Length: 154
Image (cartoon, rainbow, N blue to C red; front, side):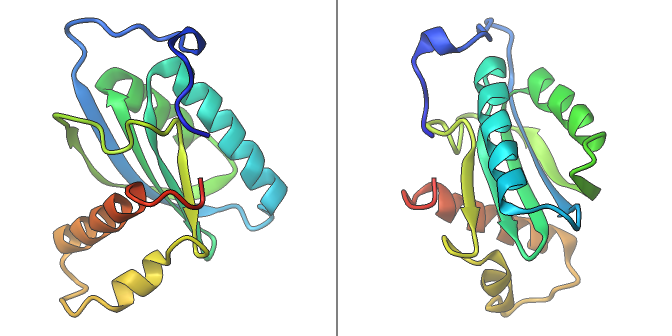
């Protein structure tokens, strides 16, 4: 689902809102099935619309990678809520900071999976050191940026 009309949004930006982002990785609950994943997407899209957030959720081999962006207070409030969500575990924040513009501005929550593009294959093709955490995060960010430019798998 792409962006909705402004009347669908509860959040109203203020001049002091800084644009922030967070990228995290987590492990899906072992019993997570496709219908539960669809519910997560539906809830995420609604919640993000109400909070002025956009982003991307990539799910592959039982692992979530999620990029959230928007007013930094909303991003980190949601992150605190997600830490308590029992549909996933072992949440690790990989990167966070401020943005000058959104990467997923037209997406309440972009979704991709192995059928769209494989993050794990993307990482396996990477001919660099795998023990460099910053390089790993940069590679995941590059993958999500490539996903943001595709239209399939919404």
